Image (cartoon, rainbow, N blue to C red):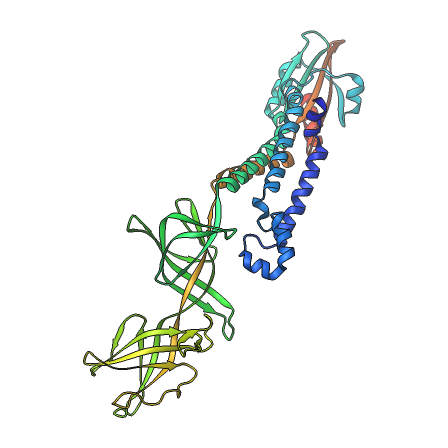
Length: 456
């Protein structure tokens, strides 16, 4: 049992676990995490995908073995601290006032001189306390001993770092077990109340709804590379709009602890509106107008109204000559429109973006329609994230900064003093050490000695 206790608290085990975590993190950085399984299988192949998925490498930071390593590291830190902390606390609370002569000779700074005043105790208290030292005395008669020390509790710096790591591990574990991640695509004008989990296996309810009111994307000039994309999102709960936000990259929407990040966008295959050109023998120039999806458009100063019935981004005909779309890519955009006059349907026809001359004039009034342009309907892709352990993680990082600051920039300083009386004078012997900033301590030690000699 003692061997197990010692092994769990060994430094070698800690170094090994940190090495495994480091290698695992590199793997998690190189492999896509939480991506669509269908795309991963297509990219890596069926066998490689199955092997990587078996070991949880596509969800590495949520895998059982990664969590087990974190738990083992936490146990190692606890055992390591508990094994060494009692002896350290004893040294901190009750450091030795008197040291042996051979130990004194090993100390880096020493000084011995005569003191010509009265009992030097009061002077020693004054000089040391002025610099923040605390004195402990041993012995009432000559020789008497004293220990002046400050910064004793800085020895706890590494243990504060240990505690901070435990808090970070606790927060990460809570986030892994109780939190969730996923993604959702919301077409413009539509509302969703659920999202797909990160592994793509199931859908989860949000408890409220999100509506995409509008989506805008700008591109670098002359390219299809997005420069910026922005979504206007409304949160709806209980049938009421409770929050509106313009969502952009690195500026997430937060509601009830759930964060929504702008991550992607794309075209739905539908359109928000189409732009038609009408060639009318009664007009010198073609008439251009925009027809919104799902609404009739009344031509000004006429009895004509136009309505878009269907739109296919990649128009084709099947073996029965029925229209369908081969894909959601805008390879052969076409719209079926209905022209009415005075509330009466005149005719229906298809108009094409690429084949404007496909249909000649239609209707008894010799009208020719062309599909001049269209405004594609887009969707916004949001990453969904809920992490209830993030507060513990931030607390751990704050404590880690404190512990590292104490360990790196603060140090305990000790000065041992021996007072002996003889021939009407006092003899003072001082020896000290500092665990860090030794040059600064050497200057301070010299100043203290000069003040006690009366030379300062």
